[in-house]
Length: 112
Image 1 (cartoon, rainbow, N blue to C red):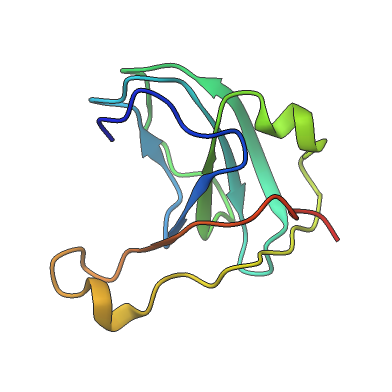
Image 2 (image 1 turned 45 degrees about the vertical axis):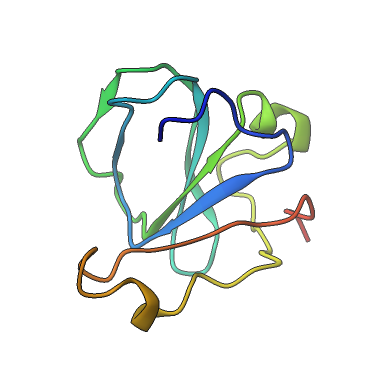
């Protein structure tokens, strides 16, 4: 939040998360909603600034926020199985302020 852009190979993995909003964002984002096994259950390409998708995405356990166009560049589609190169940040580092929400970056190696 507050950044003017996201690097093409950069992202934010939000755990747990089944809906997002774009309030206060300065750039569009691609969103991939993932289940507990990291299977893509919904893709939202180029979600615009100040838009809202507050309805929970069924079966989503986490959300991967990516630079605009990343879903297309990496060929990520609903049903794909992703492999993360990073684990979510340790729970102890984020509680109690975020109520257990965790985030981590990933590298460009998204698909198995």
